[in-house]
View 1 (cartoon, helix red, strand yellow):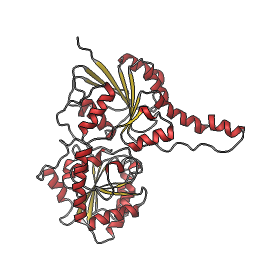
View 2: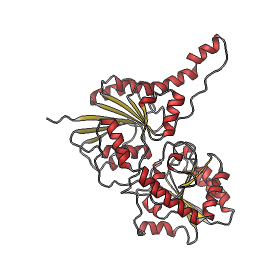
View 3: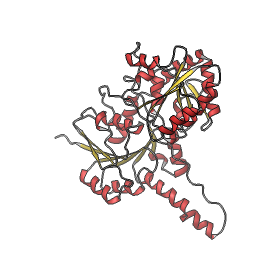
View 4: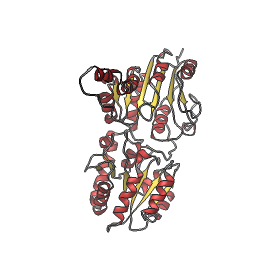
Length: 405
């Protein structure tokens, strides 16, 4: 008699971004009669449209709530009776430590966390002699804050990080157990993201918006502060004052869209920058793009970088999080310091002025992704950690969406 392994993925979100896409990619590769997956989402059901109607997966939503009570989480998890619990975190502290405890005391065989974003630096340890400073170092607010985060790492069997930068911060700053904190780099679906060899109708429409002599730039991401699209706009204003012509399409939406549109107009970029909003398929934009740009102030390892590189597009990105683990400076793109419109503009101008260098980097980018960032390798490793399987099952092509990785 075949035994079914029950897996519950716990997350909290109201938008479909890189974290959610990563979870869908994993769940779709667990399409097996001996596995039953549940996505428990404290937020909105952004998953069902992209799961392809799999019979062994269900989505339970509990509505957008500011906090998740311990007792509520424990009762739900206990009712699901999972063998494996996986907490999927868009950022450190998405769930408080006691939610991990709730999962632990359901007597699941394995409790796992996946961390997608580099944590902020831990509070500095207080210095100074004396009894009062000793007490503050051990039970002051910095110590309490640190322990609240550290407990999450202590209460799980494995913490999976999407980049080495995420792991190094958790182990080095927050004291996560090094042996139980592992890195599985994000991968790219090379069957889905690949040059078609011909220009689709959608790609032709995108290209027609740029003008015949303009170099096309592309930015994909939710319009949140973390993405610092305001820095990109300031950089483009600097570029526009020079001799090289370019246009930039920004794909994505979010709460900062009205402010960013107003900033673009104020900087005189209405003929250079186009806000495309969310889209169901980013591939036509990638087909028509010469240079990918990402000006974030924090990242884990953005899926969009690998997807752009799979199309042979060089990238100009900020040197934050795991960006340097996929973008090799001077080889597949350029890394610049975060928060500097001038440095970002200089990198863009360099690649506008050197099209042969841009093409060389694009070829290297495609090669790097194909050799080191295949999604099937990443998902096989994830599956092995989550359920002990050694091979991920191939899946049919999935729908692509605009997301904020």
